[in-house]
Length: 339
Image (cartoon, rainbow, N blue to C red; front, top):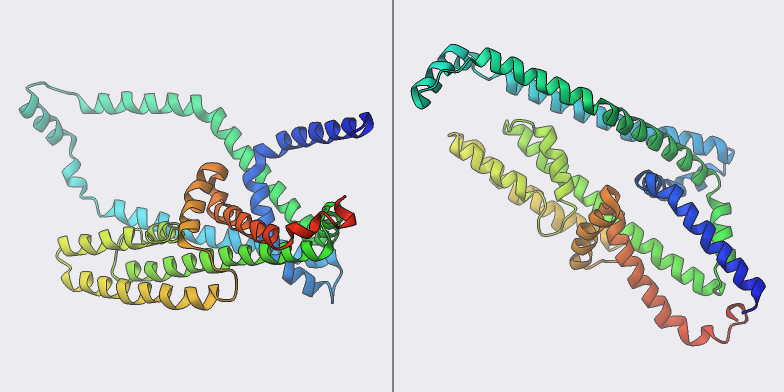
């Protein structure tokens, strides 16, 4: 390696490191934009046959924002409504301060002034809130900037996706057939995770949530979201929520509802996994449940929330890369492009 090549490599490493510093603060939003762009890119290609790329990208970005924001608002409203109803069921008569003061005095022998204590507590809460207001404002600002960045990235990833892929292929020092094999296997892994992992989790969690809603479990919307997240983890799934829900109904004397929820969850929710997963996954690369579990749990630690999706993809991409290496490694040394 001569001095000129070494200098260029140092520049590449330097600017790559500086670029990484720019991306890291918004890594979650960048990864989210890439994920959504990957899902929507086939639609973008079809739309480009009829409308300009920019128009197609704008329409898909609007669809993606609506598809995320609207369900989020619906869930927030449902959870808030559940919380309000829960508060309304509290028996305010049992919260008489005078009775509480008398009970505390009888139990401890000390007289307390609850109104004064509540006022002091409220003042302390207000002081903490004032001290944290700057931190909260910074967090909200960061989220708004991150979401805006993700929207812009999504637009340009869709609009210029073909040029970006061509650029990556041009820079990759591998023969075209090897690249085709690698990208095909990587595409299979991505769709296996998204369709056979994420989509099934959303369907399972939603079906289980309908059971909670039908049997009158409080905060059913909130627990549905939790079950969707838990369904991303094989062998765990929504049972961690609907199981205790069955016990709750049983202990509160709702034996019929408890039995109905148990039967519904075991048969309908359980069979949805048995029938839907083979139907979806058979179209793509099948990933071992151990890979999914390790990818999900390790991905959360490594990438945060987006690790739920990217963790299994990283492990699946490693397996795909090893397959490509095994199939093509021996002949790569004789290819002029790899010299």
